[in-house]
Image (cartoon, rainbow, N blue to C red; front, side, top):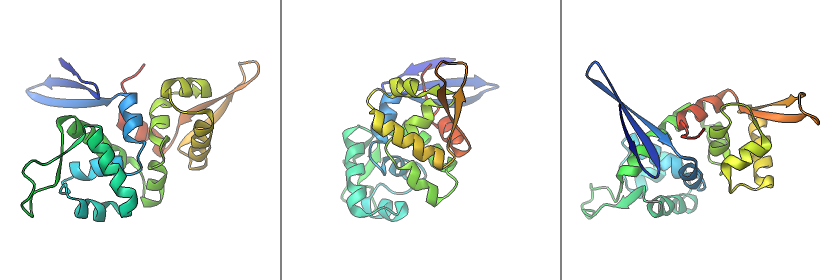
Length: 204
């Protein structure tokens, strides 16, 4: 087994019977940064699927408005996940390309996108805290545990996200009656489970 660490992901390369399997684990800090812009995951997933790194085809494939799309594109460049193609100029040459770090996260982004049942629920996926909350809730968590894991989330933002995810049936809520007073426990459910597993978060 060979383990390679980077600031954004942990790569684990496993070799069995001459076959090589590469698994990616995104860390929580990078996940929060990427998902803080509505269309960032979508852009990464589309580029991983083969959509050319030019604004027009990406915009068309995403279904986003230009005003919503542009900030996400700039955000990915600032995070070091996309870069300007130095050979750009030819009409068929992509304007943007994935960096090596971006290519790793794009694999995860496509898995997340595939886990969402339909376009209607894709809107939930684009909300800032949806994916991070699901990623840290693969097992039952108290509100305080989720907040600690996400660090920068406010009480209000987390409460709103959990409420929306419960309404969408992506998170379940159970009351732990062994505590005094009883405390609610939250856990990813239904499509939320698939999204959390797709992220494959590298945390305890």
